[in-house]
Length: 401
Image (cartoon, rainbow, N blue to C red; front, side):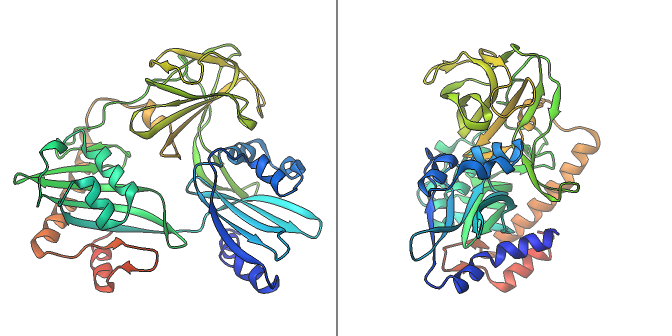
C-alpha cells in the first residue's frame, strides 16, 4: 500500500503532463498569510471537499503557510488540475480535479535523505562562509545555534576550521526542511570545540554535559497527555497517512494556560480548526501555539513571561472535548514539544553516557582523519550541480554514515 502511494506521487505530474496536452507545471512560494480556504475560493473550488477530512487532517491543512514551495498543474484554459502543498517536512496536501469535482488527500512527501559532510576554513565568519560555500542558509543558522552555547564566536578568526556532519532531505533538487546536525566542530586558536547530538535529540559537549539549558515550562500545571506528537505515520487500520503536530493535554474547561517561555505574542484570535489560538515567538526561532481556548487573555504584540496566564482551556474549533493542543515550531517546522518540556539539566549517566562516549569516539576519529588527509567535502551545492564524488560517497557509506 505504502509503495503504491509513493509511486503515485512520483509519476503524478508526468502522467498529467502527457494526457492534458497544453497543461503546464508551475511552482510558487506559499504566501504566509494565505489560508487554504482562501486558496480554494480563488480557484472557485467548493469548500465542501474539506468535509471528507477528519479533525486531525483539517488541523494539518490549517498549518499550511510557512513559505513552502508548492506545485500546481494548470490547464491551458487556466483551470487548476492538481496542487501539491507541503505541510511541514513530511506530509503534503494533494488537491486534484476529477470528473465529479475536486478531492483532497494527505500524502507523504517523497524526498531523498542523505548524510553530508561540510569542511571549510573561515574567511569572513562561520555564518557567512557556510552560506557561501555550502549553499545552505539553514545549515548556517543551525550551526550557530548549536555551537553558541560553547563557543565565543567573537574570537573566531580567519583560517579557523569548521566541520559539520549533518542529514539533509532533498526534494526536487532543493533542500527540504532544517538540516539535522549530528556533530559540529570548530577549531580556533589550536583548540577543537565539538558538539554532538545524541540519540535523545539533545546536544552535548565532549564530556557528555548538555549544552542548551533554555528549555520550556509545562503549558498547564497538571499534565495529562491525551494525544502524542507524530510527524508521519501510516495508520494500519485507516490505511492512510496521519500526523498530529503537537501534544494534547486533557483538562477541565477554564483551566489556566501558561506561557511555556518568555516571548512576544504574534497571534491571538481564531485560526480555523484550531479555534481560539495564541502564538508566541520565542528566542532561537521557536514559536509555541496554544489552541482550542475558551477565552484568550494575551493580546497580539504583548510581551509575556514564562508561567504567565495567556488564556483558558476550552473546546473551540474542531474539537471533541476540552483540551489544550500545544504546538512547537522551529523556523516553521513542527517539532515534538515534549522534547523541550521534559528537559532535565542533569547530564548523561550510566549506560546512556557509555553509549554517548562510543558515539563521540566514532565521530571525532572520522573528522580528525578528514582534516589529516584533506578529504574534500560531500555537500549539496546548487540545483543544477551536485558536488558528490562517487568515491567520496563510498568512503562515507563505508563508515556507517
